[in-house]
Length: 375
Image (cartoon, rainbow, N blue to C red; front, side, top):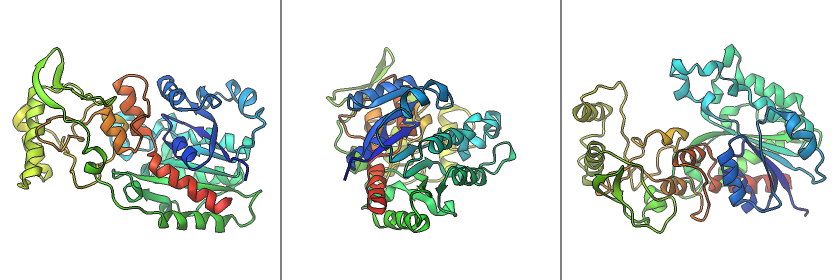
């Protein structure tokens, strides 16, 4: 069989494409708007792969000169538009006005490239919030389904059946996502069977649950020191990206109390109300929501979000002696990126790209199932 090729749109730091490469696909083209994300792609891609640092809506800047003139057969298009506009959490903050965020319609650019390139299949990944999103009062799913159909692609008629919890696929993290598999109606006469087979085979690929301890338990400990020059923890590690952000003494104390509560089995701070109270006690402020979450050694992590770069209060390390939030390397481990994967940019950039990524251990399963069903 000739090599199968996919284009990675909204490529981020390359989690989707890494999995597809591991499954034997080639990824000749990546398209990504963020410059530092593109630098990360360059560091981790082969020299012959083209990294396009461009706004996907600016077709005139890349379409004719790069994609359509390539003689390479493109078998698939993979990717997922930025998820913030579909996020239920984001929508709940009215000041963000997510319902009128133009990113709600970036799927139109994804669809434009489908229409022009006509690959065999596509994978469209996004958050659960897209299933209920109604930007500008428009039912997103109806619009999405109609657009894909007009471009010549069949998809599952019930997208609620397209939801996967990646913790069931060897990813040490609770991460639910919608995975839309589309099949070219002009190339396959039995598209419904192909689609049904894909989702059926995916359900068969579930793996043993991986825990936080499985993912990060072997990494060197990083313990608090007396705060000097915006350094709060002593780092003695040969692992790249394994340096924590600065934490003040108050937060370190809270982190230690909460982690010790879990480790001891007392569970005094298990309820939301008790977490609100400890926040009020140490900050002299009230909060309508709880601020803290300690990772549990024996369970998958909660979802690694893009906004992890703003604070780590919901991703507190489970070892009470360390009193800190997780590092970039720990986030990368929880996302199943290998330790030799290079992330470029600031710590903020790295947390953002990890929170937006698709875990490679999940994407490799996607790619293998596609090969089984279509080829």
